[in-house]
Length: 473
Image 1: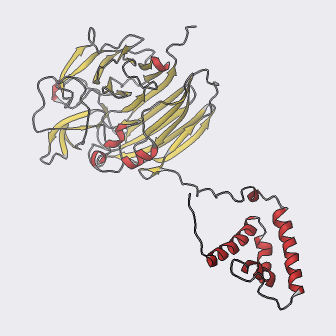
Image 2 (image 1 turned 60 degrees about the vertical axis):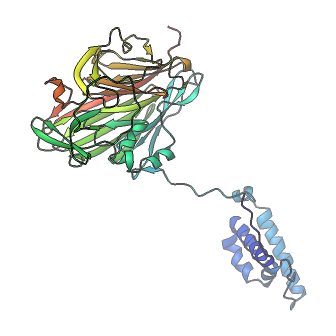
Image 3 (image 1 turned 180 degrees about the vertical axis):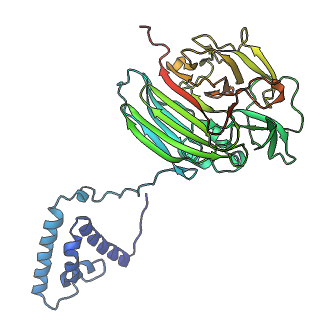
């Protein structure tokens, strides 16, 4: 509470100002206040205060008193009798000035919304918030869940915290802080690329079809995921990860209301990705929110004059509403997984191993519990259902589940990231294997799509909610 202490003279001035302000708020100031200010009686009224004479001008005696009386009557009728809306709030503190829209990356944060229609009886999506100034990162998705009410589908801090975190320094020098929450989009390569590191460690060099590609190194800080394995990359090997659009600004952001929600479209004119990629690329985004689904579509088009490699993926952190990671389950329809040297460097050896008979076998339709197993693994040889790669995140304690359906035939691998002690599961459906340009794969198709000038490729993901403990029909 703010308290003002006024001297007698200041209090007198303050009271005079308040009297004038009340007239103005009542809506009559423009009409009568100037005339009242010209009146000697008004001057006398506003001059009264502690230590002052009640009426300073006595030259006209009776006439002056009549003026005072008439003015008092007029003020009573105009101010006391008129029920102007502002009168209802008299004596109440004025509201703070309205804040402008929050901006991150120089662009307004955008939210798609819809009204709930299920009366809490079925799960349904309610909103989707994204960051056009940060690579179209989906900051948060909200949903209504039976028995729990409104929940956050993605693991994200407050938007104010994110705005402070995305400051372009440290981990965020190349946009890396965008990957620690929500759902970042990873283009033109998801996951990691290894190559020859520069002496200062700020870039690395790799090769594609005899062409040299120089990429900005990615500063990172990661939790250890599992017991390390022997062997490792050469000492001069560098690593980059998560693509080149994490700090990109989208243009031509448009929203439209549909029968059961809203859609948004935008474009990122990525060009040569800051001088780090071949040819030139445009990225067209479409987000569609309905009660039953969230659809995300990204189309990459080669608008340059030479061939280029492209892969697309996403990095959504799915929250576990119960907060109990150990009992949470995942379903991943993959029969193979990539072998890495250890879970700190995560350098792929070029070998794939079957998941059958291991703790990494998540193929059961009901999924398998995470228990205390940490994960940062790439799964492949995916089985499709009706053409889709259906991954499930299930939280039995919350009676909650989300289907993560990869709808593009180009999706060849799924990276699952869920460290011990954390209350999320990241499901990264992507075109490519880890280190797609690496010699360790010995010429295997690693999922990078070659786009000739004018060609396009599309990545599409659909999210659906379900109730795992619902009775069968």
